[in-house]
Image 1: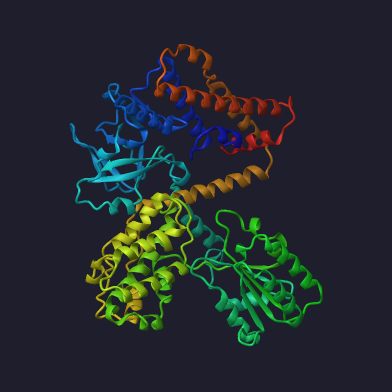
Image 2 (image 1 turned 45 degrees about the vertical axis):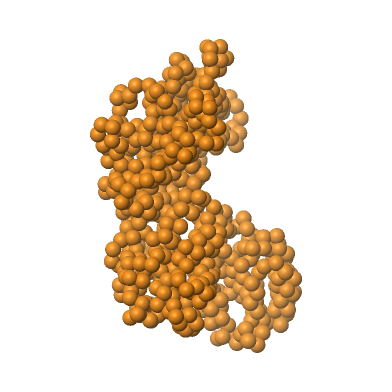
Length: 193
Length: 447
């Protein structure tokens, strides 16, 4: 990619043609969003230049609604049981976001109100997609850590400088040692490469 | 095509069409290096973790009657305060025909220019024919060697990069070699079994975190130079703590290793968590009861009552299973990911070399023009920010995010539009081609 384009753009490991097709999708989402000034029902978070600013907005809205200092608040990520945007209505609190891919693990979808959980990967499926995620903000003190894997979210598989935020992903049970997923190098990526 | 198999297939291809010697690195022979050296041709030895070139130089020195003991071979490890000493030693060696080894010059970036000049002068001023100079340096992190080391030194020297094999067995073997019989003999007697177990656990830890590097960003998100010095210091700490405490202070050991010795290298919090988790899994009381030492069953901590150092060393040779990603706690897919990246990088280099070399042939130029036309035809218009501002009746944090995104998108879209239209004009001869336009054309050609 030409250097000045890359400078004005975002982290990406796509080839130029793939990148261009991806750019058009980003513009399309942003056009719909700015046309009706309503956050998309399921926002493709990876399609933003600065995904963190949207997540911060979730925290801001929550802190105002509950009169809490921003410092006392953190993000909560719940993985839903559907991959399809059509299954969702506008979130009452927080936001539904998608466009996440797992690296180092796969996801077992659950039913009803239960949440799915991390499972062993299938051979040769390197980056399985994660279902739609519901992101809300909660008080730090209320954060659940049992049977949860604290999972770094990156823009690309380059990791390091493309880091965005920590998500919490459910494990099958509290008997699973968290070391299993830490040493497997499990992360979420905002693109499948 | 399977990009993850490309490296392997290419190796095979080179082997068949050119011969084994282009793919297999022969064992390093210091005498061959010496043959190539002259008074004015120093040896430049690239340092890799776990390899010390001093014994190699000492070995050839022995054969040429240059020895540390009688001062005919001078070995200086660079650091603050050594600058003048090294220059004086250089002048003296060149005059009297001694050998000089200047180690770790990567620590002395500014001084290297002084050294470069002194070396040139020494070689011009009728040096003694037996004078030889050896220079050692770590490869710079991320950068190129030529950005750190003055050009004339690199050009005039024989460059030796003897990277030791990085498989689990070699790493473990090398780690154990840092703790010899004498080291074991000094261990506190009342805690000798604990010492044997924990030294072996520490060596395993060291080997696993080194081996994890080959999985690229999935292993560690940055490059860390964990080295033998860290291992050795951790061994000393173990010595002291076992001697000083009634119970083995596992938490203190893990803290010192994870936050200070090895942790001192780590600059990413998630990498620190990974490192601490290895310590958590390996350095625990169960290590005394034959627990697993890799994350995949098959390699247990031996019963210390039945094992002396020699048995531990043999145990590595005889019992360590064939290496696989699961032993590091990783899924076999991690290896595919790593090999795919390697294949992609390889193709990237081939494309870049091809694009820069041939100049634009007729076909390539047409393709670039087509890409420009395609992009320009589909590139969306800028967002109308003024009109957007007008429509916002009541703002909220989400709307602010959307307008910020639209602003940034406009910057990107206009940068692309300008780059493409300029290049189009340039290729039609309406504008002079600038460097920026050439670069854009090259990028479009590669795609």
